Image (cartoon, rainbow, N blue to C red; front, side):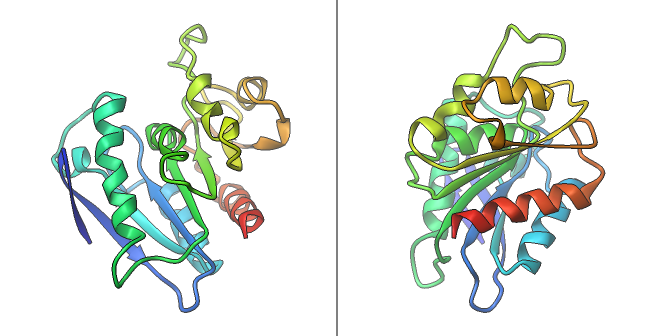
Length: 204
């Protein structure tokens, strides 16, 4: 499915099981690509668990840009994609969970309230640049919680963008975070998928 946005077309690859339990809109990180083994494993695991998954390559990634745009234009190009998936004859069922890896997790957190989503699943949230804990994105991470939207973060134990302990310290409840073996790219996909499926089940 191609969706026009202010930054050009975005692509949503939709897998919809019969009688889907709900929908997860899943997007990539700063690479702009949907080829990561962690993302593919989460997509496949969610579909196997009965969820429709819209696997979204954002417009800037489709255009071949090497870096994501600033938050405001990125969010403005993300909103119409999710809205298109929820409307029209082929609209996907609720409840709706926004999810993304790294930069995509930031987008999900920033737009969750505007899209009245039912949950936010962050994969490898980039709490700060490596070696720069003073440059915190905790404010973005907390946005869904402030809006009363369920949030969960799956974080690699050795993630240089923020350890699970650092992410827990940024949130009110340590239960919001699942620590798994790995770094920013989580290669032990079994625990990653298990944590993702466990969280979306709580949204039902």
